[in-house]
Length: 484
Ligand SMILES: *Cc1c(COP(=O)(O)O)cnc(C)c1O
Image (cartoon, rainbow, N blue to C red; front, side, top):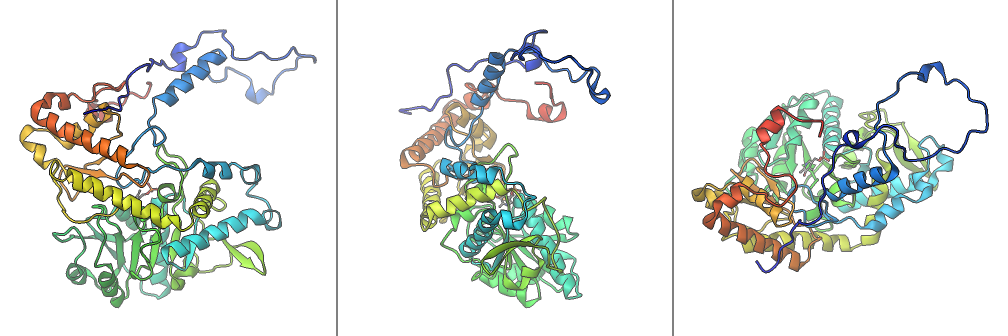
């Protein structure tokens, strides 16, 4: 190792504000009262909450220190597979914070918010064009919420034909939220085993698809980072039995401007704006999971919908077959603004972003494949999946490798997911990282593999440098200490 991205230095201890507070200390001074004192409202009299007494500088230091303990994509490489932790350009935040948008009340009549309605309308059109689908609603608040919208649409579609169906096919490489969303709509999940190449085989789908099956939910690219290359054949089989094809498009970062979901035979798809379209995520911040459909399912989209009539934009609830409302007002508008700004500022470079994301993942895969076991040795999409098989003789596991990466200043990749690979390590570099960063990551992974052979104890005790060392994860789950 020539270089190391260490996280050492001045990282200070930080007690809770309650432990730090001292009775009587204040953070501000009120001006002297120039009216007579009056008793407060009966309702709010009494003890009040037990807030600690602190000075201004104590509060500022507390929150500044906590913010410095955080690791984000603005701090360093964050190769968390399936999450697309890419850099979100700050100009998109700036547009979302424009006072006209940030201050707009969602209760404004349409005539006073034409700009915001137009922005929603155009974002939906852009997303339709990027995916190849016909109609979009940006209302769902997250990926899984978009899936729920999609499954409600499946349910409503079959019901409208007076032929409700009870089952749904879900490949073993689908995201874990898929069966959960399906079961919320009362569908019973039927697992579909992927073949030895890590993708769906049309024969397996044909053997499971019947006329009580509402359709299939395919994650494409799947959670092995592989493109479902038989998707058209699979879609044909599902359609021939009257079923629908759902595509979990949370991994759209691999496909923008490259793959046409319509041509693949997809009927319903969701996107994760907080992965692909420039909203930072993690920590439970707001996201958006637009649901995109083909023409024949448009009537079922959630309401209200933004429609255009003679150059004016309106919110319409007049869709009697709609699955209903899924979010207050029209979803997380700030996230929609960021996606709009991102799409406009990227233009046709969206395709380049996807190409670079795929190139970066393949670069890492090729450079590390002799060092770590690669279960599916073939071109990947935006992420690559290794396992800890080569480290097994030294009794070093995926968890040890992930923890050791923290000592070197990298956020660990996704581990133990997807479940179809034992001890999986799923790396998604995204288009954000330059070649030097990728090389440093590769060099670090190789150094860790070497340590596994020469000094396995070091890995079992990792991480050594961060503030919080290796935790007993079972105890943390069983006896959580919520006080700090
Ligand atoms: C992230 C992800 C989801 C879930 O998205 P949330 O916004 O976390 O609900 C679903 N499917 C895939 C493939 C994902 O990567």
